Image (cartoon, rainbow, N blue to C red):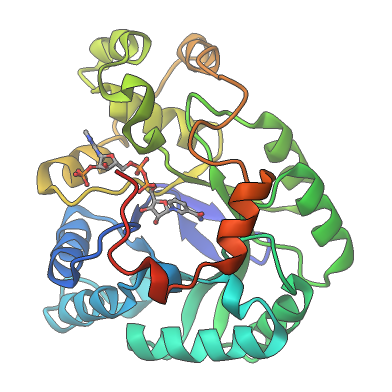
Length: 294
Ligand SMILES: NC(=O)c1ccc[n+]([C@@H]2O[C@H](COP(=O)([O-])OP(=O)(O)OC[C@H]3O[C@@H](n4cnc5c(N)ncnc54)[C@H](OP(=O)(O)O)[C@@H]3O)[C@@H](O)[C@H]2O)c1
Protein backbone atom coordinates (compact mmCIF):
# COMPACT_ATOMS: atom_id res chain seq x y z
CA UNK A 1 0.00 0.00 0.00
CA UNK A 2 1.17 3.50 -0.82
CA UNK A 3 1.68 6.15 1.84
CA UNK A 4 0.80 9.82 1.33
CA UNK A 5 3.25 12.30 2.85
CA UNK A 6 1.49 15.11 4.72
CA UNK A 7 2.88 18.67 4.60
CA UNK A 8 4.55 18.14 8.01
CA UNK A 9 6.34 15.00 6.77
CA UNK A 10 4.03 12.53 8.54
CA UNK A 11 3.32 9.39 6.49
CA UNK A 12 -0.37 8.51 6.19
CA UNK A 13 -1.61 5.28 4.57
CA UNK A 14 -3.35 6.14 1.30
CA UNK A 15 -6.17 3.74 2.20
CA UNK A 16 -7.93 3.46 5.53
CA UNK A 17 -10.96 1.81 7.08
CA UNK A 18 -14.11 3.76 8.06
CA UNK A 19 -16.58 2.81 10.80
CA UNK A 20 -19.45 5.30 10.36
CA UNK A 21 -22.83 3.72 11.23
CA UNK A 22 -21.23 0.62 12.75
CA UNK A 23 -23.31 1.05 15.87
CA UNK A 24 -23.04 -2.41 17.39
CA UNK A 25 -19.77 -2.33 19.37
CA UNK A 26 -19.07 -6.06 18.95
CA UNK A 27 -19.57 -5.79 15.19
CA UNK A 28 -17.36 -2.70 15.08
CA UNK A 29 -14.57 -4.39 17.04
CA UNK A 30 -14.68 -7.45 14.76
CA UNK A 31 -14.72 -5.30 11.60
CA UNK A 32 -11.64 -3.37 12.77
CA UNK A 33 -9.87 -6.65 13.64
CA UNK A 34 -10.75 -8.03 10.19
CA UNK A 35 -9.53 -4.81 8.58
CA UNK A 36 -6.19 -4.98 10.41
CA UNK A 37 -5.85 -8.64 9.35
CA UNK A 38 -6.57 -7.61 5.76
CA UNK A 39 -3.79 -4.99 5.89
CA UNK A 40 -5.54 -1.70 6.72
CA UNK A 41 -3.46 0.45 9.04
CA UNK A 42 -5.53 3.67 9.10
CA UNK A 43 -8.78 3.53 11.10
CA UNK A 44 -11.22 6.47 10.87
CA UNK A 45 -13.75 7.03 13.66
CA UNK A 46 -15.41 10.05 15.32
CA UNK A 47 -17.01 11.03 18.61
CA UNK A 48 -20.26 11.18 16.61
CA UNK A 49 -20.04 7.48 15.74
CA UNK A 50 -20.26 6.35 19.39
CA UNK A 51 -17.86 3.48 18.64
CA UNK A 52 -14.41 4.80 19.62
CA UNK A 53 -14.37 2.29 22.49
CA UNK A 54 -14.77 -0.65 20.09
CA UNK A 55 -12.01 0.73 17.84
CA UNK A 56 -9.77 1.06 20.91
CA UNK A 57 -10.54 -2.51 21.99
CA UNK A 58 -9.71 -3.88 18.53
CA UNK A 59 -6.48 -1.88 18.33
CA UNK A 60 -5.38 -3.07 21.80
CA UNK A 61 -6.19 -6.68 20.93
CA UNK A 62 -4.36 -6.54 17.58
CA UNK A 63 -1.28 -5.02 19.23
CA UNK A 64 -1.34 -7.53 22.12
CA UNK A 65 -1.59 -10.39 19.59
CA UNK A 66 1.51 -9.07 17.82
CA UNK A 67 -0.39 -8.47 14.55
CA UNK A 68 0.65 -4.84 14.37
CA UNK A 69 2.53 -2.21 16.36
CA UNK A 70 1.08 1.08 17.55
CA UNK A 71 3.56 2.91 15.31
CA UNK A 72 2.27 1.10 12.22
CA UNK A 73 -1.28 2.24 12.90
CA UNK A 74 -2.75 5.61 12.00
CA UNK A 75 -5.81 6.42 14.11
CA UNK A 76 -8.09 9.32 13.26
CA UNK A 77 -10.96 10.70 15.30
CA UNK A 78 -13.07 13.85 15.00
CA UNK A 79 -14.62 16.45 17.27
CA UNK A 80 -18.31 17.13 16.79
CA UNK A 81 -20.10 20.51 16.58
CA UNK A 82 -21.05 20.45 20.29
CA UNK A 83 -17.29 20.59 21.01
CA UNK A 84 -16.40 23.19 18.36
CA UNK A 85 -14.67 25.62 20.74
CA UNK A 86 -11.30 25.95 22.51
CA UNK A 87 -12.45 24.19 25.69
CA UNK A 88 -14.62 21.77 23.74
CA UNK A 89 -11.73 20.59 21.57
CA UNK A 90 -9.57 19.88 24.65
CA UNK A 91 -12.45 18.07 26.35
CA UNK A 92 -13.34 16.11 23.21
CA UNK A 93 -9.71 15.05 22.71
CA UNK A 94 -9.38 13.79 26.29
CA UNK A 95 -12.67 11.86 26.07
CA UNK A 96 -11.76 10.30 22.72
CA UNK A 97 -8.33 9.29 23.97
CA UNK A 98 -9.91 7.60 26.98
CA UNK A 99 -12.32 5.64 24.77
CA UNK A 100 -9.59 4.78 22.26
CA UNK A 101 -7.11 3.85 25.00
CA UNK A 102 -4.30 5.74 23.27
CA UNK A 103 -1.56 8.02 24.56
CA UNK A 104 -1.18 9.94 21.29
CA UNK A 105 -3.46 10.40 18.30
CA UNK A 106 -2.35 10.29 14.66
CA UNK A 107 -4.94 12.74 13.33
CA UNK A 108 -7.57 14.91 15.02
CA UNK A 109 -10.23 16.40 12.79
CA UNK A 110 -12.88 19.13 12.97
CA UNK A 111 -15.87 17.11 11.71
CA UNK A 112 -18.01 19.99 10.44
CA UNK A 113 -17.28 23.59 9.36
CA UNK A 114 -19.58 25.14 11.98
CA UNK A 115 -19.29 26.74 15.44
CA UNK A 116 -16.14 28.21 16.96
CA UNK A 117 -13.81 26.29 14.68
CA UNK A 118 -11.04 28.85 15.21
CA UNK A 119 -11.09 28.35 18.98
CA UNK A 120 -11.11 24.59 18.45
CA UNK A 121 -8.17 24.82 16.04
CA UNK A 122 -6.15 26.90 18.56
CA UNK A 123 -6.58 24.10 21.11
CA UNK A 124 -5.68 21.52 18.47
CA UNK A 125 -2.55 23.48 17.49
CA UNK A 126 -1.49 23.52 21.16
CA UNK A 127 -1.98 19.75 21.52
CA UNK A 128 -0.15 19.25 18.20
CA UNK A 129 2.83 21.29 19.41
CA UNK A 130 2.83 19.28 22.67
CA UNK A 131 3.19 16.08 20.61
CA UNK A 132 -0.19 14.64 21.55
CA UNK A 133 -1.42 14.72 17.93
CA UNK A 134 0.64 14.03 14.78
CA UNK A 135 -1.61 15.74 12.21
CA UNK A 136 -4.50 18.23 12.18
CA UNK A 137 -7.43 17.96 9.82
CA UNK A 138 -10.78 19.40 8.82
CA UNK A 139 -13.76 17.75 7.21
CA UNK A 140 -16.52 18.96 4.93
CA UNK A 141 -14.69 22.24 4.28
CA UNK A 142 -15.64 23.25 0.71
CA UNK A 143 -13.41 25.45 -1.50
CA UNK A 144 -14.44 28.82 -0.04
CA UNK A 145 -14.45 27.71 3.60
CA UNK A 146 -11.13 25.91 3.30
CA UNK A 147 -9.58 29.02 1.72
CA UNK A 148 -10.89 31.29 4.51
CA UNK A 149 -9.73 28.88 7.20
CA UNK A 150 -6.30 28.16 5.73
CA UNK A 151 -5.64 31.90 5.22
CA UNK A 152 -6.33 32.59 8.91
CA UNK A 153 -4.89 29.67 10.91
CA UNK A 154 -1.20 29.07 11.66
CA UNK A 155 -1.00 25.31 11.05
CA UNK A 156 -2.65 24.72 7.66
CA UNK A 157 -4.93 21.66 7.67
CA UNK A 158 -2.91 18.57 6.76
CA UNK A 159 -6.04 16.81 5.45
CA UNK A 160 -9.58 17.80 4.36
CA UNK A 161 -12.00 14.85 4.46
CA UNK A 162 -14.89 15.25 2.01
CA UNK A 163 -17.41 13.23 0.07
CA UNK A 164 -15.36 12.25 -3.00
CA UNK A 165 -16.30 9.49 -5.44
CA UNK A 166 -16.84 9.04 -9.19
CA UNK A 167 -20.27 10.75 -9.04
CA UNK A 168 -18.88 13.75 -7.12
CA UNK A 169 -15.31 14.42 -8.25
CA UNK A 170 -14.83 17.94 -6.77
CA UNK A 171 -11.69 19.00 -8.61
CA UNK A 172 -12.42 22.58 -7.48
CA UNK A 173 -11.81 21.78 -3.80
CA UNK A 174 -8.83 19.56 -4.63
CA UNK A 175 -7.24 22.53 -6.48
CA UNK A 176 -7.61 24.71 -3.36
CA UNK A 177 -6.09 21.96 -1.21
CA UNK A 178 -2.98 21.91 -3.41
CA UNK A 179 -2.34 25.56 -2.56
CA UNK A 180 -2.24 24.82 1.18
CA UNK A 181 -0.51 21.43 1.03
CA UNK A 182 -3.72 19.76 2.26
CA UNK A 183 -4.24 16.11 1.31
CA UNK A 184 -7.77 15.24 0.12
CA UNK A 185 -9.38 12.28 1.88
CA UNK A 186 -12.57 10.66 0.61
CA UNK A 187 -15.49 9.80 2.81
CA UNK A 188 -18.13 7.77 1.01
CA UNK A 189 -15.57 6.60 -1.57
CA UNK A 190 -18.17 4.00 -2.62
CA UNK A 191 -20.88 6.71 -2.75
CA UNK A 192 -22.45 4.91 0.23
CA UNK A 193 -23.72 2.39 -2.33
CA UNK A 194 -25.72 4.98 -4.33
CA UNK A 195 -26.03 5.28 -8.14
CA UNK A 196 -25.75 1.50 -8.61
CA UNK A 197 -22.01 1.88 -8.05
CA UNK A 198 -21.45 -1.82 -7.40
CA UNK A 199 -22.76 -2.81 -10.85
CA UNK A 200 -22.17 0.42 -12.76
CA UNK A 201 -21.56 -0.42 -16.45
CA UNK A 202 -18.71 2.04 -16.99
CA UNK A 203 -16.85 0.90 -13.85
CA UNK A 204 -17.62 -2.75 -14.66
CA UNK A 205 -16.27 -2.42 -18.20
CA UNK A 206 -13.02 -0.89 -16.96
CA UNK A 207 -12.74 -3.47 -14.16
CA UNK A 208 -13.22 -6.40 -16.53
CA UNK A 209 -9.86 -5.55 -18.19
CA UNK A 210 -8.07 -6.09 -14.87
CA UNK A 211 -10.26 -8.72 -13.20
CA UNK A 212 -11.50 -6.09 -10.71
CA UNK A 213 -14.98 -5.13 -9.45
CA UNK A 214 -16.63 -1.72 -10.01
CA UNK A 215 -15.95 -0.94 -6.32
CA UNK A 216 -12.25 -1.62 -6.79
CA UNK A 217 -12.13 0.61 -9.90
CA UNK A 218 -13.84 3.45 -8.00
CA UNK A 219 -11.36 3.15 -5.12
CA UNK A 220 -8.33 2.86 -7.37
CA UNK A 221 -9.41 5.91 -9.39
CA UNK A 222 -9.46 8.05 -6.23
CA UNK A 223 -6.03 7.00 -4.92
CA UNK A 224 -4.55 7.37 -8.39
CA UNK A 225 -5.66 11.03 -8.50
CA UNK A 226 -4.04 11.59 -5.07
CA UNK A 227 -7.10 11.14 -2.87
CA UNK A 228 -6.88 9.04 0.30
CA UNK A 229 -9.83 6.64 0.71
CA UNK A 230 -11.77 5.18 3.67
CA UNK A 231 -14.12 2.44 2.44
CA UNK A 232 -16.40 0.98 5.13
CA UNK A 233 -17.77 -2.54 5.30
CA UNK A 234 -18.71 -4.96 8.05
CA UNK A 235 -18.27 -7.95 5.71
CA UNK A 236 -14.89 -9.63 5.68
CA UNK A 237 -14.98 -10.48 1.95
CA UNK A 238 -15.75 -6.86 1.06
CA UNK A 239 -13.14 -5.56 3.53
CA UNK A 240 -10.59 -7.73 1.71
CA UNK A 241 -11.90 -6.81 -1.74
CA UNK A 242 -11.70 -3.08 -1.00
CA UNK A 243 -8.00 -3.23 -0.11
CA UNK A 244 -7.12 -5.45 -3.07
CA UNK A 245 -6.49 -2.47 -5.32
CA UNK A 246 -2.72 -2.15 -5.10
CA UNK A 247 -1.74 -4.61 -7.85
CA UNK A 248 -3.16 -2.79 -10.86
CA UNK A 249 -3.25 0.71 -12.36
CA UNK A 250 -5.84 2.53 -14.44
CA UNK A 251 -4.73 4.10 -17.72
CA UNK A 252 -5.18 7.82 -18.39
CA UNK A 253 -8.10 6.86 -20.63
CA UNK A 254 -9.72 4.83 -17.80
CA UNK A 255 -9.24 7.77 -15.41
CA UNK A 256 -10.93 10.16 -17.86
CA UNK A 257 -13.83 7.75 -18.35
CA UNK A 258 -14.45 7.64 -14.59
CA UNK A 259 -14.26 11.46 -14.47
CA UNK A 260 -17.20 11.61 -16.91
CA UNK A 261 -19.51 10.07 -14.26
CA UNK A 262 -19.41 13.29 -12.20
CA UNK A 263 -22.86 14.72 -11.43
CA UNK A 264 -21.39 17.96 -10.07
CA UNK A 265 -23.31 17.75 -6.81
CA UNK A 266 -23.93 15.46 -3.87
CA UNK A 267 -26.99 13.31 -3.60
CA UNK A 268 -26.10 12.49 0.04
CA UNK A 269 -25.64 15.86 1.80
CA UNK A 270 -24.94 19.51 1.02
CA UNK A 271 -23.13 21.19 3.91
CA UNK A 272 -24.37 24.62 2.75
CA UNK A 273 -28.03 23.61 2.80
CA UNK A 274 -29.72 25.46 5.73
CA UNK A 275 -31.66 22.33 6.80
CA UNK A 276 -28.45 20.27 6.95
CA UNK A 277 -26.57 23.03 8.77
CA UNK A 278 -29.34 23.32 11.36
CA UNK A 279 -29.32 19.56 11.89
CA UNK A 280 -25.53 19.27 12.24
CA UNK A 281 -25.24 22.27 14.57
CA UNK A 282 -27.91 20.96 16.95
CA UNK A 283 -27.60 17.17 16.95
CA UNK A 284 -25.37 15.58 19.61
CA UNK A 285 -23.43 12.29 19.51
CA UNK A 286 -25.78 11.06 22.26
CA UNK A 287 -28.81 11.69 20.03
CA UNK A 288 -27.10 9.88 17.14
CA UNK A 289 -26.72 6.61 19.07
CA UNK A 290 -27.98 3.76 16.87
CA UNK A 291 -28.50 6.08 13.88
CA UNK A 292 -28.28 4.68 10.35
CA UNK A 293 -29.08 6.45 7.08
CA UNK A 294 -30.93 3.50 5.52
N1 LIG B 1 -16.36 13.26 7.68
C1 LIG B 1 -17.61 12.94 7.41
O1 LIG B 1 -18.53 13.77 7.48
C2 LIG B 1 -17.92 11.54 7.01
C3 LIG B 1 -19.18 11.22 6.47
C4 LIG B 1 -19.43 9.89 6.09
C5 LIG B 1 -18.42 8.95 6.23
N2 LIG B 1 -17.20 9.27 6.76
C6 LIG B 1 -16.09 8.27 6.90
O2 LIG B 1 -15.87 7.64 5.63
C7 LIG B 1 -16.08 6.23 5.76
C8 LIG B 1 -16.65 5.64 4.48
O3 LIG B 1 -17.85 6.26 4.10
P1 LIG B 1 -19.28 5.57 4.26
O4 LIG B 1 -19.19 4.53 5.29
O5 LIG B 1 -20.27 6.66 4.48
O6 LIG B 1 -19.59 4.97 2.82
P2 LIG B 1 -18.84 4.02 1.75
O7 LIG B 1 -17.58 3.46 2.30
O8 LIG B 1 -18.83 4.78 0.49
O9 LIG B 1 -19.92 2.85 1.55
C9 LIG B 1 -20.22 1.95 2.55
C10 LIG B 1 -21.39 1.08 2.05
O10 LIG B 1 -20.97 0.25 0.96
C11 LIG B 1 -21.12 -1.13 1.29
N3 LIG B 1 -19.93 -1.81 0.73
C12 LIG B 1 -18.65 -1.61 1.07
N4 LIG B 1 -17.83 -2.28 0.28
C13 LIG B 1 -18.59 -2.96 -0.60
C14 LIG B 1 -18.30 -3.83 -1.69
N5 LIG B 1 -17.06 -4.12 -2.03
N6 LIG B 1 -19.37 -4.35 -2.40
C15 LIG B 1 -20.64 -4.04 -2.06
N7 LIG B 1 -20.97 -3.22 -1.03
C16 LIG B 1 -19.95 -2.68 -0.32
C17 LIG B 1 -21.21 -1.19 2.80
O11 LIG B 1 -22.02 -2.27 3.22
P3 LIG B 1 -21.55 -3.36 4.31
O12 LIG B 1 -20.92 -2.65 5.47
O13 LIG B 1 -22.84 -4.05 4.65
O14 LIG B 1 -20.59 -4.26 3.59
C18 LIG B 1 -21.89 0.15 3.12
O15 LIG B 1 -23.31 0.03 2.94
C19 LIG B 1 -17.04 6.15 6.96
O16 LIG B 1 -17.15 4.84 7.48
C20 LIG B 1 -16.44 7.17 7.89
O17 LIG B 1 -15.28 6.66 8.53
C21 LIG B 1 -16.95 10.55 7.16
